[in-house]
Image (cartoon, rainbow over all chains, first blue to last red; front, side, top):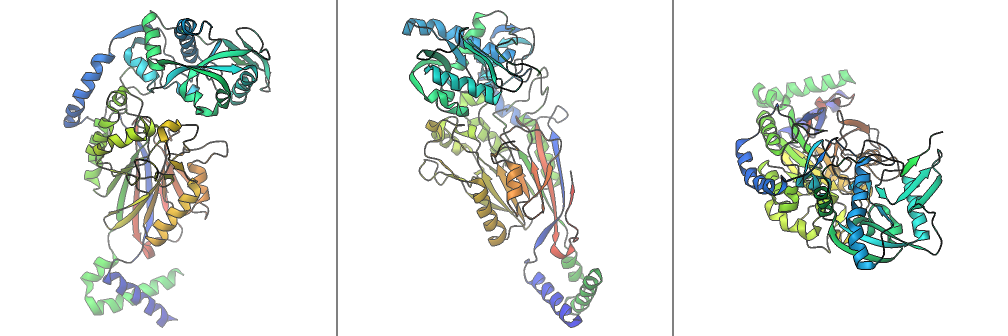
Length: 254
Length: 303
C-alpha cells in the first residue's frame, strides 16, 4: 500500500514538472457589487471622447417643453398609474383629430404596455430629452379595429395579468378574486357584432407581450406617428404635466 | 485520509529532493495561488453619462467614464481580469437614437471589454443595425442558443470562447432569451432560438470535459427569476452542472450580493446581476489552486 501511494505521488510530481497538466481547482470565491458613484473620478480622455457626441445631442434635447410639479413613476401604484394614464390619454388626445380626419370615425380606446414606460418623469422641467427617456424606442402608433370578442379577450388579458398596462377610453374593475366586475368602453358594455377602434403601438400589434387579441383584427390603420414624437408634441401642447391615478383599472378589496 | 495524504506528500518530497534540489521543489509544490477577477455589467442600455444629481432613483450614479477609472484600478491590482457584459447594450438614451450604438461599442472597446452576449434590445435596429455597428466593437460577441445561420451576422457571433489568464482556462458561453413576443420578427429575421438548457448542457460538456476549462462562465440574458415555468438563471443553474458563474441580465435585477445556489449535482453555483444602466459593476474573484491543495470540504465563498 505504501509503495503504491509512493508510486502515485511520484507520477503526479513528474507530470507536474513535465507540463502544467495538474488540474486547477477553485479554492475560494469572493463576490460583490460595486456602486459607481461620484466617489470615483471620471477619466479625462474618455470624457473628451464622449463630449462632442453629447454636445450635439444636448443642443437638440435641452429645449423645455412643459413642467412636472411631481415626479412620476410606473411603480407609484398598482393597476393604473398617473404616468401610464398620461401616456394613454396623450395617445388618445393626439391621435383622435388625425384619425377623425382620415377615417370619419373615432378611436374608442387605447392600450399600451406597462413595460413600454421606459423611465420616470422627474419633478421639474420636461424637455425633449424627457420624451426620449420615456419612449426611447422607434415604435409607431397604430389603430386596430377589434370585434367585441377580441375586446373581451383584451379585458380578460388585463384581468389575468393585473399589470398596470396604460389604458384610456375604457374601464375595468376586478372583484377581489380577480374576476371581472365591470368592463366598459366609452362607458358602455361590449355589444356583440360591434367593432371598436383601439389605438396601440406596432410592438403590441405585432405580438409583443403576447397580446394576441391584436392579431385578431379586422383592419390596421398605421398612423405614421412615432410614440416618442407624439409624447413630445403632447408636452409642447401642455404647460403642466400633472396626471393622477384614477378608477380606470382597479381591483376591489375584500 | 488526512494522514494518508501527509504520508504521500512527505514520501514524494523525499524522492524529489533527490532528483532536483530543494529550490525547484518549493516552486513547483508551492506554486502561487491563481487569482482571476471577473468584472461584469448588464443592461447598460446606452447609459453613457452618469444619472444627474436630481435623478429620482439613481442620483449621481453610473457613467462609463467612472466605470473606466474603476476597472483600470482593478486591473492594476490584478491584471488577470476579464470584463464581460450580459447584453442590452443598446437602447435607452438618445445616444442610441442618434448614433445607433456606435458610441456604446467604441466605449466598450476603450474599456477593453473581452466579450458580451446579445440582449433582446440589441436587435432594436434590426439584425442589420447590429451588423452595421460591429466594426466599432473590438471585443467578441458570444451566444450559443441563437442560430444565426440564415442571417447576415452568421459567423460574427461565437458560440463559445476560451480565455487564458495566468494559465487558467476560462470558458465562456452565452444564452439569449426567446425573441418571439419580445422582439419584432422584422428585427430578428431568421434568427432561431434554441433551448437554453440543452445548449448549456452541450456547452459545459465541451468546455469542462473536452476543453478542460478551469472555470466555466455563462453570460445569460435569460433573466434572474420568473415565478412561471419560463427559463431563468436560477432554474438554469439548478438544471445544469459544471457552470461556476452565471452572469445575468434582462430583468434589471439589483442584488445586494451575488446569489449562491446549487446545481444538479448539489455543487454551488454563483449567479450575479448588477441591475442596469451601469449603476453597479459586478466583481467576482476566483482563487484557484492545484487540485490536491484544495480542502475536501468544498469551496469557500464570501459574498
